[in-house]
Image (cartoon, rainbow, N blue to C red):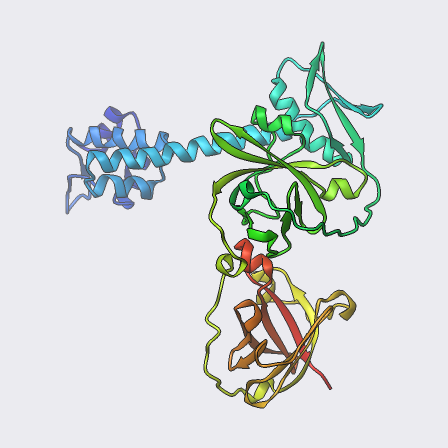
Length: 411
């Protein structure tokens, strides 16, 4: 049948069929070489409707072409549809979140409480979820569960003030054998009761990378953590308690973080016991190969002064040549000597022996923390800049990507 008749039977336009032909999605069974007329068979009507169904399901023309042309098995087809279903469910969740965030919340703060007006078009949970953001935006901390009172939802809040420094403290070590081992981080909650209700969890802890905390034997310190019975030190003492729930051991830590330093209350960090192995700080640390032979690099010999700190890898690609204040930088200076020796100056320490740090072409080898920090020298407007990887405790213990320090040659 000609293209016009085929289009009528399929309920579509000729232009659609020509486009499908161009895209090699639904090619005519025959094309008259003299007239150029396209001829389709009745069996191709089913193929057209399959294409239409896949388009309605959200597949792109390229995806449809791959599906139709590859003659996939039923199992492979089900896997394709399962992935598409997950994409739509994720998009639906994002749409619901966007809709919620655009909702105007009727909230008032008075007498150390927040009062949210109930509405007919939003659930209590949705309004409480939105209130989490509104309370923080108003510079308050929620310190109680949400409670429905008539036409309102209420909770206790604390108005936050200026940040104050919490003095570091170190208690003498007292053993608590049951906490030794590896703990999975479940998240931070405004109050402990939120954990029981499985609501309003901040699932990351210092970013999204750190998934576990370790309680090492004898309270051994790693990263910025140590402990003694009843307290996690990070580096202030955060009181903890343990509880068995469904035969699993949980830990609830009263965390003295950002809100607390501004006159608020502690938040609740929840951990779940993962194992009871007796790890050491060296064992759990991320390590590089630092046993690299010396290879000379004349370009770096001499003294370099800290210029700036780059917190992201994309900063490294196009860093700002404007220097930061040296007083704000922790890594102050590095001097490279012939034959691989070096001297590193930090805010609170100096390393200048080969058992602590050496260098070879392309790397600063910090032996005391098993890190091979790669460097490169980049010339901008006639000036040399050395960019060195900064592999701090975040990298060694938290699984984070490396940061970078930038140095310039001292005059």
